[in-house]
Image 1: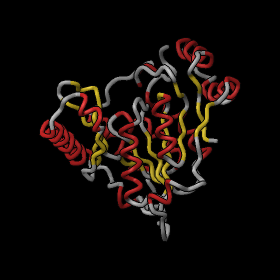
Image 2: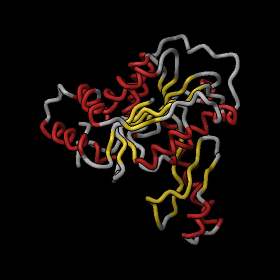
Image 3: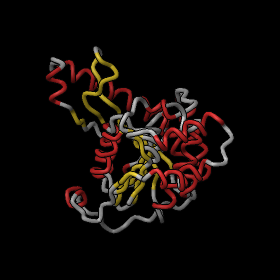
Length: 284
C-alpha cells in the first residue's frame, strides 16, 4: 500500500479539518521536528493558534541506530527501556553517551530554530501535539509527559497515521487522540505519503516564521489552576479512540479527499478502506 496523502502539507490540511471538529477555544499547537512542523502548520492556522515545537527525540545506540532504547525531552528527562537495553548488552556508559548525543542535538535545534518556548504557554492551557505519523509512539509519549509536567490542562495528540501499537499507547497517555488512519500492519510513516522528502532545518525555520506572522498579539488566557498529572491521568472524562467502520471511513475521511484528482491517491484510499487490520480512527 502506498500513498494515502500527497505530502505532509496535504496530510496537515486533512488533519486540520478533523482537529477543528474536536478542539474548541484557545490552545497552543506544538510539533515534533522536523517533519511534524509541516503537518502542524495547517492545524495551527485552522485553529488560529500559536505554533511552536516540542523537542523530544529517541535515544538509540550506535549498533542499532533505528531502534529506540529510550526518549529524551528538552528538560533532560529520559524514559529508558531497561529490558531492551539489557537484551542488547549495552553498558551504562554506552547509554549515557547516546543520551548525551541526543541532548546535544536538542540543544542544537533549540538554538537554530528559535521557536517560541513551549513550557511557559502550557499552564492551564490546551495543547495540540502533532507529528507526521506515529510508528512506535515513544517520542510522542515523551512529549505528552513533558506537557503534563509543565501544567497543560488538556493534551490532544493529532497525527495522520499511526501503528495500532502506538495508537493504543497514545490513547492511554493523551486526553484526546485524533488519527486519520490506524494500521495493524504498519510499516513506516513514509508508506502513507506519495511524497515524503526529508524536512530541512531551513524549512522548519521558514514554517515558524510564517506562523509567527499569523499569530495574534494576544496570547491564550491562562486558567487559574490545573489538575496534577496523577489526577489528570485518572480523570474519568478522558476521551478514548475507537476505530471507524468502513462506512464511517468512506463517509468522512474519503469525503474530505473526494475532490483529489490523483489516481494513485484514489487507488490507495480505496485499498485502505478494505484492507484487513487497517481503519480510520476518531475520538469517541
